[in-house]
Length: 288
Image 1 (cartoon, helix red, strand yellow):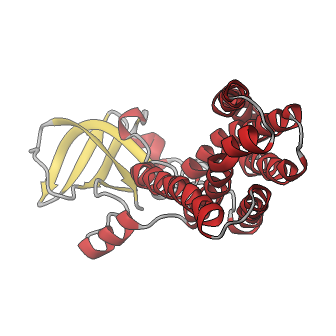
Image 2: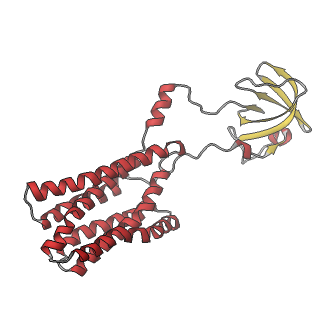
Image 3: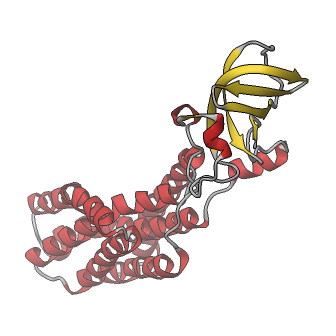
């Protein structure tokens, strides 16, 4: 039996560490594209929505304010439900798909909404979809990213999300002002990226789990030498262990540690302090 205190799987190549630190999961990239397309669709439609309600439908600014209140507030109410459904089903991808699907249906439905009640319903359905998808989407990002890279992953996603929010009104302005298209045509074109998001979501995103964080060595229970020398089907090479005992022999970075049940060789990498007769506690991994 042999124990090493060296860090398992440590990367010493700085270039390799740099590549690992800047890598973004394909799932995160796909979710960024999904969010960008969704925001282009949503923002381009909402940019001309006030014109449609007040000019085309002849409604007052109070009516538009009511619609805008629905737009801003409904999603917040259902976000908890979206998170609960994702956890309960353990299928965050398909809960998110339901949310994105509702928003896509709302975008198409808006083409046929002619009354104030119909428009209000369409906006409510769109925002319910946003509330449902937000939490499971964030869960997908977390599952696909290691703990040390989650800030980068969420930053990339938010950048793509905001890019869509900026591009949406610009697209609507070009279609409405420069191309001279009617409002309903703008709504029709705004529905296209919403439908594309569903295709990307189905074929571009897989539910993956990031590698677990390294075990907390401080939480590893203390073993005896005797327990380590006996066969244990639940323990294998590379498992973290912790021992307490006295150093009875030392040669360079190798020591022999003895407790009340026996002795075991320990490889100290990098070399650490300790002389014969010292009582120490060591933490490391089984290597033989």
